[in-house]
Image 1 (cartoon, rainbow, N blue to C red):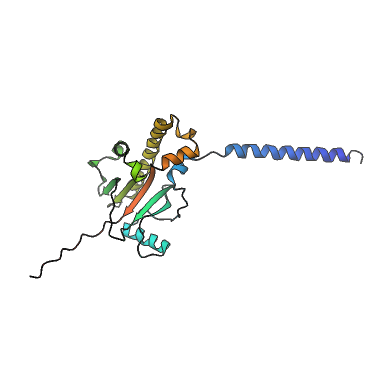
Image 2: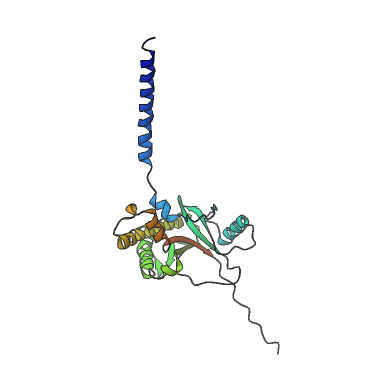
Length: 223
């Protein structure tokens, strides 16, 4: 019984040591996900799960159900595309207004035909084509605040479309690495949250869904 206080002290010491040891690897394992931070919109926008393989009209209807509106314009939200949470801009042009866009557009047709800004291109050319687009419009992003892109699929090849999404997203991240090096002389992994936010002000990758207003009907003179 005389050794009871000593034994209690030893038990407490062992338990404390074990607790300290288990905390260290958990804290060290927490690493900041720069990819996720750059791709998603962090401005308290809603999250709307959508199926990017759906027709655009179906996507508009889904967004309208979420917003409880008949037409939803200029709504930014986050969704998941190929395991990445990215920003989406929904623009149905409810007020018959179609703004100026600097948008990178890709069209997928049957027989694996891919059509970009400069015409027909192969899957392997998407990276260089998108990089060229971002470099050419670099100065204009200061006004548009984001890098808009759209992928329209007219074929049944959903796998090809998803590969294109993957290529566009990874090409954007490579472009952001170049911007970080040019602006801060540091890789993305070494930037602070403030520096990342400054880049995202002008270079937020945004998947665009928009509807062009119908052509105005020309009224004929009854006389």
